Amino acid sequence: MKNTSLLTLALAAALGLAGCAAPATEAGPGATATASGMASTTPFATSTTPSATSTSSPGQSASSSPTLPADGGTGAASATAAPEVGSSLADPSSSLFTTSDGLYSFMLPAGWTTTPREPSTAPDYGVPLSRTAYGILDGAGREMAVFAGGVPGDGAALPSPGHVPLDAEELPALSAQVGEAELPVSYVFDHYQDPFTGERVYLARYHLGPVPEDGLYGVPLGLLPLGENGLVVFTATFGTDRFPTPADAEAWLGTEEYAGLRGMFASLTYNG
Picture 1 (cartoon, helix red, strand yellow):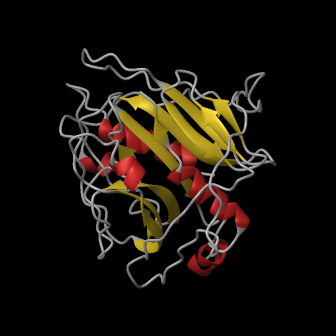
Picture 2 (picture 1 turned 180 degrees about the vertical axis):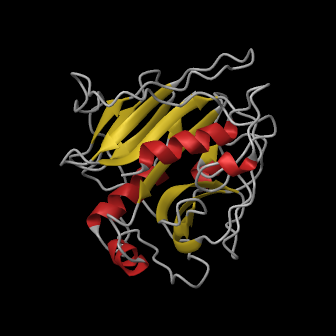
Picture 3 (picture 1 turned 120 degrees about the horizontal axis):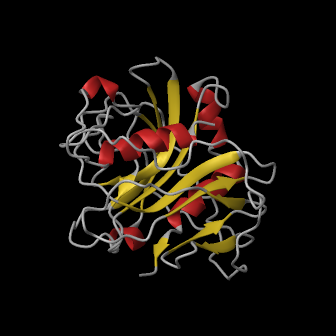
């Protein structure tokens, strides 16, 4: 899984640290950069030693939730056409997870757990933020996604072209929590070729604004100004070890595992 490395690079694109500007060629997947330079810190600790509680279950109990639509909430779309926008709801067997500061909640698919990570240590420029970060694991302990809340940032981005849409859904409930942006928030799952490694990357994330039909993005991938606690990053990243071809990723859209992942993204709520 490439969740941690891509999230690190995405956050670096959003965190402006004065005096440490880097050339645009050092940006990671998505070719993002900030107006004041790349961050010199990573969002999580680089240690790979798991903690004693790394596989603990969420501290929240299950709560009632709406059922899946008849199509399983996939909204699958052709890889050569703009993605369809459909409905996606959390599976009733999922459980509610709330971050330790109480600011964010989302539904975990049945059997999935969270493991705390060290949040970003980048400066907040005088704006106090509550910072939390988690890896999200499936029942087998594989990392499926990463979440970080309270991320500081004021970055712009370089163009990220060549995204091939697989699925997308506008999320009105999240759009209403973005504040004064007055732009729609969408869940997006697509793939693109990393311009530096040449590898194909499959990425599920949020997108603020209309989903580009031409596959050209101009904002930091996966960053969302949710509520009044800085930015949120919620991403699921896969490589060719998981999906050797785009056809394999398209086939995944019809699975219960994908429906659970999609519903998890759709259920994010800011509680502040």
